[in-house]
Image 1 (cartoon, rainbow, N blue to C red):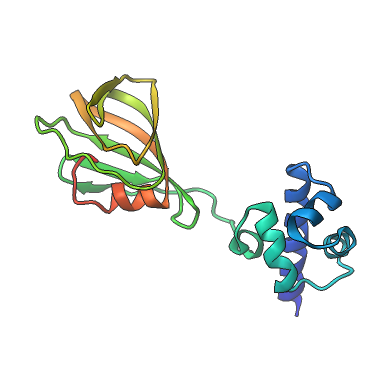
Image 2: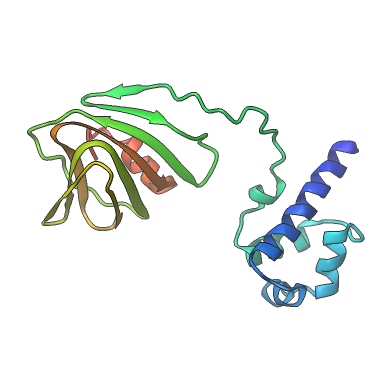
Length: 190
């Protein structure tokens, strides 16, 4: 019973925090969720039981998944200890736990004479070059991204990248679709 009370307390706190962070009044959230402002107030203050019939519309109105509201796993160990994963001329380190919607990785690329095959996938990619130079192909366009520069692009444009003039290291951030396309692909540099 104590665990259920803890979960309810966390959910109530998250609901109120998300609502206020988004700058929504009880009335505005009520309009978005088709719930009354008084129902939302009673949920936030613990005067009403939390149930799926109110949690689903609130999560939708706040643009979060139920898992974001209900996850109460402890985050006691906040330090991530990335381990290298080598494949061909690429080494990757996962910089976050694979539980979120956004994935961050560090990549080290060895230079290659071959142009990687361009691919498309849903989503958006972003990377920051820590060291070296990256040659980025976006369709017919070729862009050189230098140390200290970042690139961001829509991934429905055919794209690939490779180290240019020596090894390069970069930090990449992408969503789950990008994770599947980049980490789980057989390509060395895309």
